[in-house]
Image 1: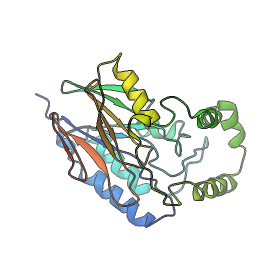
Image 2 (image 1 turned 90 degrees about the vertical axis):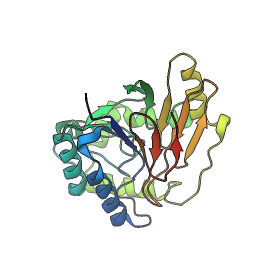
Image 3 (image 1 turned 180 degrees about the vertical axis):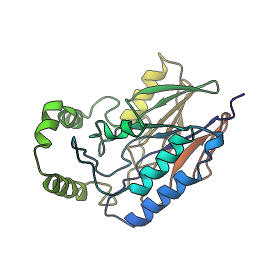
Image 4 (image 1 turned 135 degrees about the vertical axis):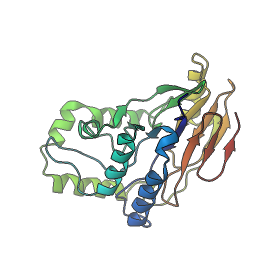
Length: 250
């Protein structure tokens, strides 16, 4: 019998964001990774925006984060599957993550574990509306646009990214309140669960925790960011529990 049933989910750590205590946030994330028991863990899913900005060139990757990658590599070497979903801040990963053994996945991603079905992703762009954001997202993911951006010197590229980030809602510490049925993500999950059997939808992106039951009976769980402290979700093969002791029974 396989003893590896545990699955961890984490989103929106925003490593490198100059808000709060960036060094402390990175240290807390490394401590979280180091505390994952490899012998009983099947997988770790990074649901996007782990980095506040990630852009890798063909021969250059962002400086730093050595302890983060070392901890992830140790988990992979110990047999834990590590999956990564591109967020809206760190979508520009091309081959480096996969060279380390990290699986880059696309949302919505269906996962079966211990008789349960999970639908995973970052959560951005899912659901109706948001035409302006979806257009911008399409431009950022366009290969020609990425090639053009790659012609910029990394110093300039990262300076532009930091300036953009300073104007974000997260950097301004503007709280977001989950809007329930009015939330595009809720509407996406509701429609998806009418055609696919899903027990848990797990996303990030909104920077606001949510735990709601959809009309289909599926659970929609949204993880908060790490700006005010660690936040994660854990599935032990029977039920899920978060880093803030919220318990969701089977």
